[in-house]
Length: 243
Ligand code: UDP
Image 1 (cartoon, rainbow, N blue to C red):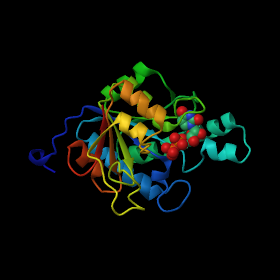
Image 2: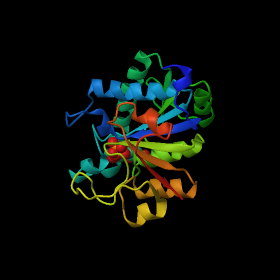
Image 3: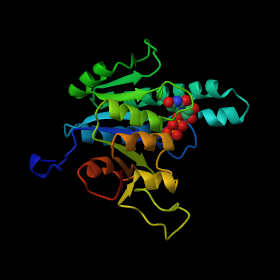
């Protein structure tokens, strides 16, 4: 693409949140390398525009604390297992990005020095300034939270202008569009409406943290090729959750 028709992107620094399930393709479990690579390419195309990128990837394709505790496991232990699952996903994404020549750092809320960097805010900011993609792993480092809350926390700490939540659908609907043909997509929706109507964008603590810090959440489909780059340029369909 020549400079003349480069999309105009008004964002300088953003956070991309994806669920662990986004990496499993149609397998139903674990990591699907071609899918990881496809998403890495989306990230690279945005990085190539000069946008500074933070990423938070969930762990639901490998392990969820709630599922473990439902099977009789102690909840906190199960949650730590979930957090470790996010580190595996982060390493997979790092591998895919680096194989494309994108410099990255995996930064974990739980120190594991042989594997990745510990979370030090100022250091992470410096990585972003040097255009390294920062993949924040191990959630918040605390049980009873989710990676949605981790995404909102890190986006605030890194002074991101918005969270981009890549999902299987192209925005927030008033009911499940896969079950109801007449479901209506919101162009914009307030944090309070998301909470009151339980619209399922992110969990309540993540939405509240975004609301209290006026951090917009843009929900878009990651299934569209070029979708992330297009959405950053304001193209395509998406929902903006804002105040
Ligand atoms: N988790 C946690 N604290 C955090 C983030 C995650 O305990 O700050 C655990 C929790 O058990 C969760 C699992 O990690 O179920 C995987 O994260 P999440 O469910 O958010 O992944 P996603 O649904 O986005 O794939």
